[in-house]
Image (cartoon, rainbow, N blue to C red; front, side, top):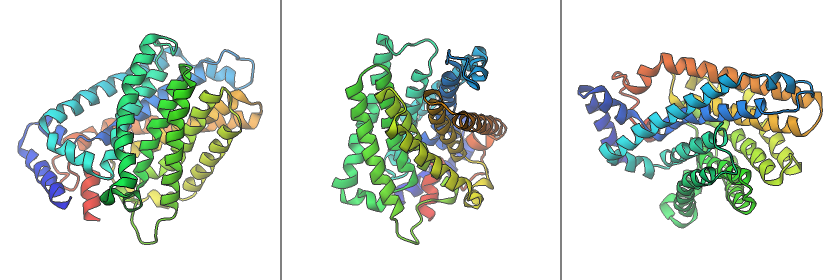
Length: 367
């Protein structure tokens, strides 16, 4: 694996004399879809908050007045960004296929390959024009779910059948991305009324989440599973139970006991990480694409809290919904501004010799 990573670094360094587009393709990796994952999940949050017609229940009235134009603009931004990154990544598949293969073979990089399809599913669920009971929704849903199932068979199968890929040796925080795809896919199927398909995907996701959580929880002291520049991905620990809570609510039809249990658990992990800001100190010294994990993780938590508040009564639950939703929006807008300001650094900054196309690969190698 070391030789191939070295080759990628050499190719990345050689792009200094190439055109900007070549440099962009070299630096681009599937982790960049964390941007669209954040924007599309934010659009879904706005749709849920603004679609409630029962405006007589306290704080719901405020969210019912959210401008529909703002939601449409947000969804269009998510869609255009997703299309743009998808086109760039497709172009890279043709022009930089060797890098795509190395990304697929890497134990961290392969997890990010779920992100594009999760983003598409979130865009579909938040779409203001495509209804869940339409044939187009079903067609698009399974078009986006099929690659997730293929990746599941490939990755989950390796975890216990391939000696060089045993999960106990290659577990990482980024492994949660594989579970997130199944849970979001299950929610999309449940919205269509396909309960059995939704339950199948939910079961596949939640069982492997337990495997990931227990494996990471029991890791030996001294083993470095969380590199400094990927430390924001620790937020995935509460992203997955939040998504599971929302997915189960869609399957069962109400925010019942299992949904509440998963929501409380995600809230506990969020509080645990929030109480340890020094854990993220080193990764905040230099902006990188992993920062977007803060945004979509908080958005999934806000989504779950919104559904909880709408299904149950209590001013405390509504206050929690407002707090988490406001925090999610603030983090999202802040990252959006920082990304626009630092766009040249992300895509074509030639001085970043220490951050080639697959930054997490080089860091993993050096560690």
